Length: 114
Length: 112
Image (cartoon, rainbow over all chains, first blue to last red; front, side):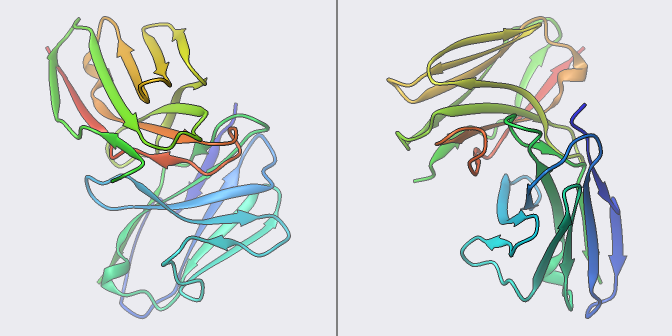
């Protein structure tokens, strides 16, 4: 149990394109989901906390207009990277908490901007 | 100073060895401690979590927390090549619902 699914797993697109990444909790409901970014050989950096039915909470230094988060249901949160540029290329990972358990993570989305 | 420090490795051990992975932390408010395993190009997978000080065992894995020295450990017995991955420690202050602070991860290689 406690499966978090992320889609797509890999996306390549041109500079200036907007890219949407989906995060789903498959067998539990999640009022809160988390979005992370991970650069090669580095740890996870929290970008924002996604709250169902309300605005996301962004970490310091993360542009909320650049990284749009929508958490419209208890099983789905989306991250949209708007007008993506090569410096936005990274590994984006979401997580969710089943009940009072620690965060369970999706398999990540590798984003490459040409 | 980072709140959670972890030696990035790489750590290379022969199959069957006992592996010791460690982290130190500086925030006294941390109460919950987790270990995640991350294979290349995959998301982290929760291995174990513990509350406050003490030991917790699950199969070949043992997690240990010493709050007096702000030191957390993960031991892997009878290591297997399939254990080769990056191991991330994480901590949070107020329960599993709080934001996690991660270490940088230790890359482990178990050789035949």
